[in-house]
Length: 295
Image (cartoon, rainbow, N blue to C red):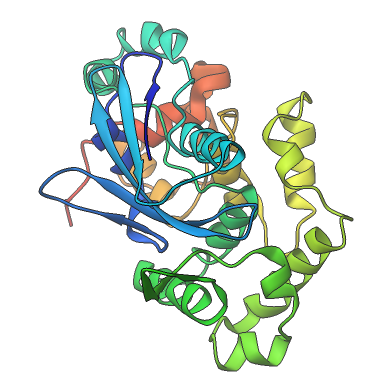
């Protein structure tokens, strides 16, 4: 099966893939030579397929080497559209960015879209797994979750989809701590999965929730394991850019960009991007830092 999906211009698949590290986390994969993005996905029908995504003139093409039903065809299209943000319009952001030398490159490079997982559940899990660890630790923990709990791809049983909430809900804290080695995050993962499975938490509804960003942020902060930094990152994935994800890297960058290396805190970081209003999280995300790469 092959389908073509249009994107709101300008669009660059490579820009989306390089927007952050999600493309390096299973069940995503990428071919550096062809620029193809792949993903092993479990569909609502229970079938596990592999999607091959390549850039086309007006958007992307998606290939699945299986025959799909009409509903499965629509599901694949919907999921790819969401993961790549094909319908997102950044014209207002670009208009502001043209006036700032540190962001002048974003429109030409079609920057703005941030690669997302197919479900908010997966993005919440992965975001929690980025906290208080090195990136190599995040990669290891995600790989363990997928290999231990995800459903296998029939054509290659060594490859698996990201585990569903019910698959994680069926395990226990001891397993997540010892075998999966999630450490203190284990009870957070278990509670999140069981809440979604029991329908006491509807994460997917938050994708289209027509509520103010401050209220959406409160709902995210109510999730165990999600603090200010994780909530800000998740808001950006949801297309809400009102908050800056403040971490040690942000502190270092802002300190050297505007404060001559002197210590700064959250207030100084927020103030540095305050003029960008609803776009400040995105302005921070794509800022061309002069200090980057220096010791």
